[in-house]
Each structure stands twice: as structure tokens, then as C-alpha cells.
Image (cartoon, rainbow, N blue to C red; front, side, top):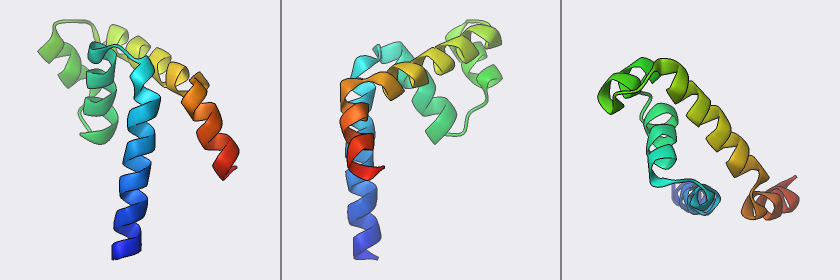
Length: 79
């Protein structure tokens, strides 16, 4: 449906803006894990790092996104 498409596009745009605070590597790991549903183990093996390091990167990256200036604006609009 058209409205759902518009909402999804807007959300994708907002998420992209929140991810600007991340390094390319951190962004790739978060996208692969959350949006592509890859396991931490799969990402770790592919990127030659430990599963624990992948977990740390995801946790820190999500925290950075949550505390970014854009996230503050985003949540103040919708919450």
C-alpha cells in the first residue's frame, strides 16, 4: 500500500541519518546483523574477528545511534 511505502521510505531515511555517526565497518556489521538477519558468528567469521567483538561493535553502535543529535530530533517528533 502507498502509505506503508511512504512510511518505510521515511523510516529508512531517518535510520540512514542516525547511522552517519558510525564508521563504515560498524555500519556494515549492524546492517548485516539487524537488517540482513546474519548471526554474529557468521559476521565474525567473514570479517575475521571474534563473535564477542562483533557483539561489542553492535552494542556500541546502537548506543551511538541512539544518542546522536538526529536521533534526539527524531524521537522528540514521534514520542
